[in-house]
Length: 304
Image (cartoon, rainbow, N blue to C red; front, top):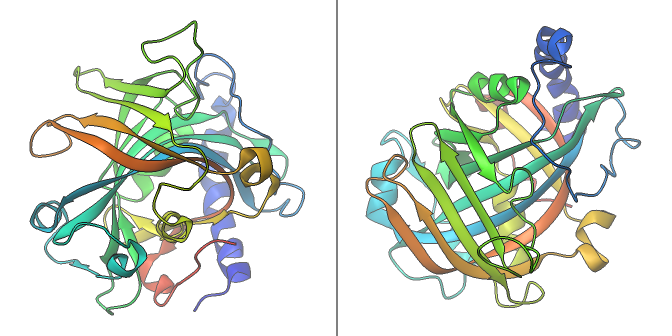
């Protein structure tokens, strides 16, 4: 298995190249969403000063879909590994865990150079057998709904993923509780992503307390640490840390439950998933960009 130290090193050249191509436009082209984030500072920057680090503050949701639908949506040439069944006690049989992520990339930096925060929404297909070895798990992300941040959009395109620019409401806190004085869902977690074509993703969730009531935390650690791809040639290897101060104590993950609607632009038909479970959480990360997917054969990091 490739070591974490080696993977961290391999990701530097690509980040520097992409950042270098856009750095002259940092003040003009990299658009930070309106408003300020409530996210905590990156706790890994001083530990890994020469690496790409940051935080992801997010709402992550598990939506059961039929295995047959998953098989329809994931390219036929890729298998689906059954590992998730053991990680999800009580999960409906003949169903597949579609993982939905609304998130804010915050305080992303390397060598003292940072990029503005950006918000995105991803429909991710987990436990994909990209390499056909029956073991190595990957996440297939065909589409990324993202705010108008030129560096982030360019990065998405490197992986063969289709980037769709959308407007988010709230603009950069898709994990935050709605104040009682604002919004259609006071005290709940609410977000909506609307594209120029009018299609939108909308969701409302209420907290259940701590992680009790949701799926096992180990499942979320596993899926968020699976390397991601769009075209199957190059992969993004993002190491998510669950043991820093921003994921513990008062910032510990909170279980949530609610409804989310995905339009027909992203699924065969407009679908509302009701009473689905998820987590509100914040994690730090070290990211390795533009790696050969084949180099990740046997990769099994599942978060620290």
